[in-house]
Structure formats: structure tokens, C-alpha cells
Length: 367
Image (cartoon, rainbow, N blue to C red; front, side, top):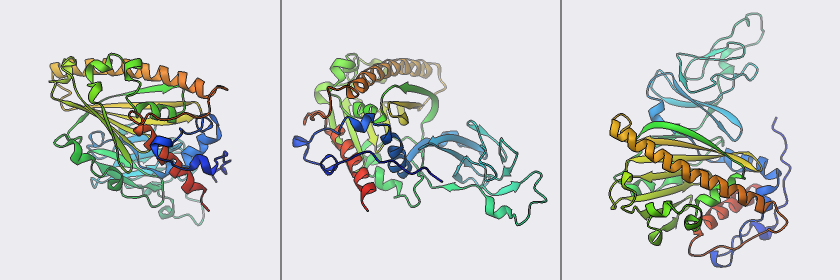
């Protein structure tokens, strides 16, 4: 049985959405009150599509990916019938794990007591269970989780009847055409721990306002004067021309696309490269950000040289973001701050995210 949520105070005024020009930012307590950590897992992360990886890691029967979604262990596996399925990574005997890491296997075996399941989730083997009465294996298969794929990316949703994934990402594929994620190949994952609330990290991602002050070198890559943010129902897009100075990203006629998909997923697209970021809350004042790198070519020597340069460049930017987010978290926890205001020109992406946040909280609180 899940623990009953202890709800923090959220007034009607705080949950209302005013026009951007007159709106205040969300209260500092939404970033600092430990009660929001549990609320965000239950109300937001467990009710939305969460990306757990790419089909390039599930090419063969038995290939599997393990992940954690809203605190729940999840397993995704390609079956012998070539179908990709998601299950809770929880044995139906006494809650043990079926997999501890990404791997390939012929059957799923609990690491606690050895129960085995076929790749379709049905229970096959139960050691030392012959004398147990009124027990039917058909009643103890793995618990499935809704799964959908989009552009080669694999998403799961813990909600009972989630909306179609396409309703969330509608229009994104057409916007970046002819770029396709489906042909990209996974190269590396890097995990960053950030000592700031997950919403602080998302806020920071969603505006270019801070670029000249936090990432001066990034302004050599992006055309800051032509940096544009657009918002849609459940995602936003920041985009800019790439300047000639960043030669390892190709010619100056390329563009950088930065998609944010509600509530905690980002796609950073540069010529020949896809980088995804998944922001995972770990406490009221910390989060882990998973950076996955995908490229068209991960084999040739020249491509690998460019990849390593790209990752070094990205790592520097991420370290800068982590540092400023941690300073912001301390500011939000101080006695000096409660709410702020938005720059209409530069922070419509942050306003969009915070409006969706308010909408999710309102819907949860409605009787």
C-alpha cells in the first residue's frame, strides 16, 4: 500500500495562471518543501510519459533496459516474438529484482529466490513451490507497464490509461525533418548529480537569458541575437542558427534545436548528434540528470574524434549549469526570496513549464 500523501499548502492564487506579462513565478516553497518531492512523483512523474532509452539498445531478443520511474523499478525487454514490452522490475513472489543492469538474457530470473519468467512476462519456474496450495502460475505474471515508441525512443507511463504519446509530441517530427532520431546510434550515458530541486534544473534549461552570464563560450556556438523560444501544448522549442566558430558541429548553416517535453525530458539536436536529458528527482533539493548521446556514425576515427570533442564541450556547459542551479537552490532556501517575475522576451519557456505544473497540481487537488 502506498503511503498517503501529505499535501503542502497551495492556495488558489498560487495555482492560477495569469498572462505572462502579469504573472509571478511559482513560490520558493515549491522548490524547497520536502512534501513536494513525494507529490511530484505521484502527481507528475507517475502520470506522464517517461523516456527510458532507445531501440538501438533493444535490437535482439532478450535485450533489456532497466530504469527507475517515479521511484518504481522498470524493465523493458524485447521478446522472442520481437515485441518490446515493459514491466515493473519486481518479482511477484517477494518483490525481488529481475534485472540489475542493462543486459541480454533468454529468461528473466529473480535475483532473490530464482523465480523465472518468459520474456513475455509469464511465470515459468517457481523453485521449491510444489507444496503450496491454491497457487496458479497464470495469476503471478509480471505486472505490465504501458509502453510506446517514437522516433526510436522508448517511453513508459505508469498511469492506468495514459494519453497517446503522439498527442504529447505532435508536430515535433515535422519540425525537425529531415532529421530522424530512429537512425541514431547510442554512444554513451553520463549521469550528473545536481544539488538542486528538479524544477530548478528544468527552469534553467528553458531559457537562454542566462547564456551570456553563465555560458559565454556557448554564445560562440549559438546566434544569441536570433535565439527563439516557441511553446506548444506539452513541449517547447528553443532554436538558434549555429555560428561558424563552432567548426566541429559543421557549417554555419546548421541549426541547434532544444526541445523540452513535459515534464522532465529534453532533446538537444545538433548536426549529426542527438543528446537526450532526463531529469530525475532524488530529494527535495537534489536531482540526477541522465545525458544519453546518439550519433549517426560512432565507428569511424574522425567521427569518434568529433564525438569526444562534443562530449567535452557539453560537459563544460553541464558543469556550469549544475553550479548555477546549486546557487539558485540556496537562494530559494534563503529568507530573501519568495516569488519573482518573468522576462516576457526571454522566459516564456519557463512560464510555459510552470503553467503546466500548476495545471497538474490543480487537477490533482480537484475533488
